[in-house]
Image (tube, rainbow, N blue to C red):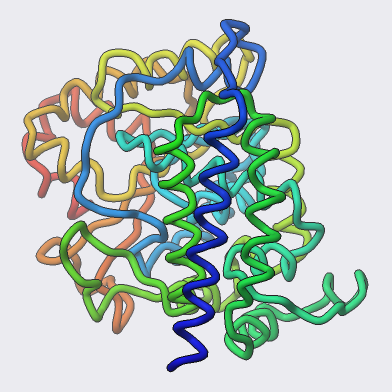
Length: 369
């Protein structure tokens, strides 16, 4: 316990150094040039809202179950839109879009994705990515072995080592210049938030769970380990970290600034419609739109009609799908044993047609689809 306390104290000191670096450097300013990464974020984003979760990882144990159906439906290429943290990278790795937009009402999600972006830039392999994310110092394995590691071996390497304060400090020292290079204006509070996020990954390791503000994680929420090691409906490991090829695809897309985090409400006045205009300008159609269970909250707030109107303005075609998850009383016998969520696909054209025909009046009308 004393060793752990010393390690955590050193990690906190490293965090303070990270924040101090932000305070002593001039802050980046957003450019009006929408061709830049920061310019796109500024042009597409709305004022931030509030949601009472940390959303560092998914709470959807079923998230992989739709992967085989995505391939069966021919969902590939085009543009991807999603919400939330890094489960998006798995869908991106499977769909292989030309560009991806991650929309979330919380500015914290933007900050988390900037941190992920920095790690993708720094990491040459899945092994290095996980080591930096969780603050572990791993032995040098060589490029060839790193490419060939099974996902269970990766998890074992992280589980088998304690957090390393020197490694944590080194990662943060390398991440800060990467954050500055994005051109996104970041305050001292933003840097402190990113540092806090990293500390959660470090302290909890692969046992990290989704958490609501002020409440402990629910025991049935999947851990990072479970999300990493799970298989899809065809029994395949499909997480973006399950293969070097999948990881490298997302890494390359990040390097091209084609994973764009946006602050916005799916039913809001501009974020989703602005993304629609950006896609039209690029002559891209959305292939997959991951909404998680956001529709539940849109119905609760009486905002679903605004979302449907926004969705209709996003360029799409007959193969374009919505990826949704449902929880609690809305899951059915189709749910995999042990799961507390159910992930499903629906054609965007079908959804909009049903809504316009008046067949969607309440959340149950889509949750049971």
